[in-house]
Image (cartoon, rainbow, N blue to C red; front, side, top):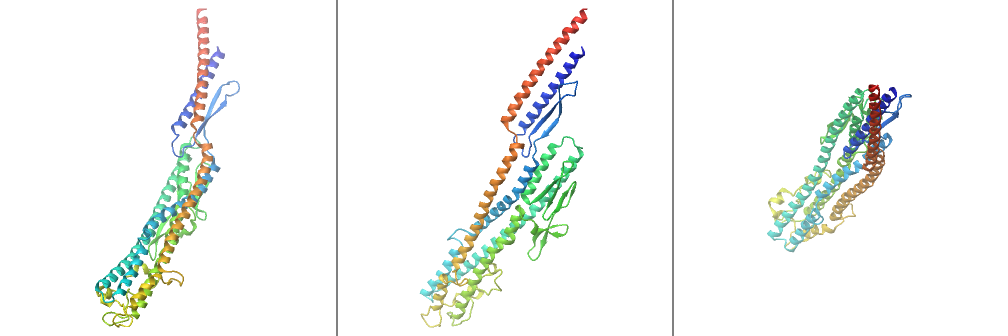
Length: 453
């Protein structure tokens, strides 16, 4: 009797074990498309000596901490280039199409002086010069403004990234607290969430993750500055800095902007503080040369009223900000007769207008490049920087994908593997059910015999 009852107990435990295996397999299949889910496997062990059978020890997540860390190490470099490529795509659009932007305005401006040289007394030609001068200045102003907008946009991205980092840090700290509260129990779901938060954080900045004994993590960034320690968060601040109010990234009162070398934050900082200011500086140089060269020749000429020494463009205070400040002289704009087309003031003299028109092909920028060439260099530089960032992003994305594939081979859910496991557990359950039924029938027969006796 005790042997049959023991067999029934053994079969019941075996049925529970196979049912638990089916449940784990079903949960894996259900979470096939759940972002960050790590495949679970059931842990079975032979029963205690004398009892036999099988016992369920628990479930284990097929987590590979080394591969998880490798993914986090590769993501920041890819994210930095992706941020740069995205920002420079906007800058490329801001510069306009070839032949329809500043290059076209320069051509039309100098062509207007060529037309004036054909008839230095023509009111229509003088109005045309004023109009083209105004449009050229406005083109410089607009492009400078759009470049400034690009910097402001990158600055807004930096501020948003700081807020997102703080949010993720708070989430990780809360998950640390929840994991610790499980006291070593089933916390794999919480650890899945934490892994996803760490992945998102590594996209923003280059972080270092240290595993805690309770299953949680500590996180540092920059030069080893802790942002999460257990359940504690040490947040970042975006602090306005003079003279333009752009944000610097601070932690604990220290400016750590320069310490963030990878991730989207680093890309946005590079765009805001290095790349776009470089383009703007080149644009300022062209505007400064245009205003200076035209004014020199214009001052040496004579207008229709017999005067000389007048500027065509309003004098600029310096190279910095020239593109934003350039404007046609108010007097010339109000009275086109003040345009100096003549060199000597003699009837038919058009030398000043011809000299200004000739600036279109003169190598006035550094003595080596024309104004149009200098503009083309800006366009080329932006395009080259953008394409370089895109190429690097694709290359590094391939590395991220390869490491992610290795991780998924260990941690990801495979439908084929789960289907095979499901059949194994199903067949084992059916076999144990038959064994249980056979023992139950034997026990019933025995009870009937005993009862009849």
